[in-house]
Image (tube, rainbow, N blue to C red):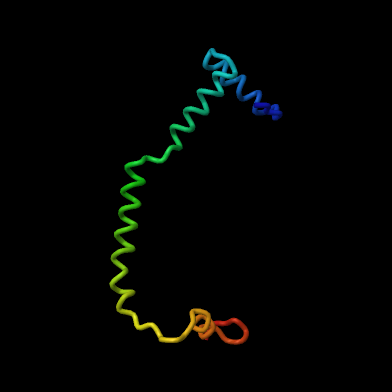
Length: 89
């Protein structure tokens, strides 16, 4: 890796000095810590996904009860929502 930003080099040297280690090791530790911190919690992700799925499934009966016009395309339905200037009817 070749980082050309002098500020980044200075930050890496400062972190290395504070940790009494090499610049490479300081960068490795900082990146590992950030990756660990930013990793999504699998349990939270799963529970959020399950909650969203349950909400969507709860909507299905409402959609099944809707009357859909026969022989009308989605484009025709969309066009009926707006006038010639593109404003809502």
